[in-house]
Image (cartoon, rainbow, N blue to C red; front, side, top):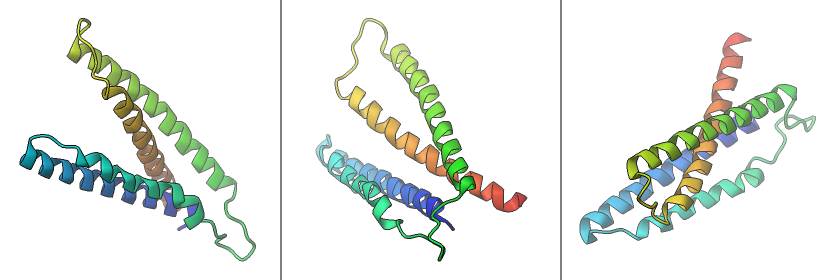
Amino acid sequence: MNKYQKIAWFNLIVIMTTIIITTTAIAIEFRIRGYSTIGLWFIGILALLKFTPFMFKKPESRSGVVCDERDSLIRKRALSFAYTTFWIVFVLLSYLLFIIIGPKNSVPTMTLPLMAFGGALFMKIVCSVAILVQYGRGEKDG
């Protein structure tokens, strides 16, 4: 397993753990109090994603090569796929929000930052999955 696969797995584990813990905390507090404010504090777990460059910094081989052309191509394809799917999903969800709320009503203020935050998480998840899928295909083919 190379550096980018490790980073992709780490990203997926951290994001899924954050989603599970945050959803659980919100559900429990909502059940007890009728509203929830504590869930936003658990999003701080995502700060671990900023430490990936430091955690997976060491070269894997004795020659000191961190990645080759294939690794760079896989990473570029994954980022391109994540960027494309983000915009498709973002535009579709924006239209869906317009259809649900209607032209005469307004969008709550909290919706826009949540859309940006959700979009960033969506891109990170799609990019990580795309990296893992591409490496999985490469091992089976060659």
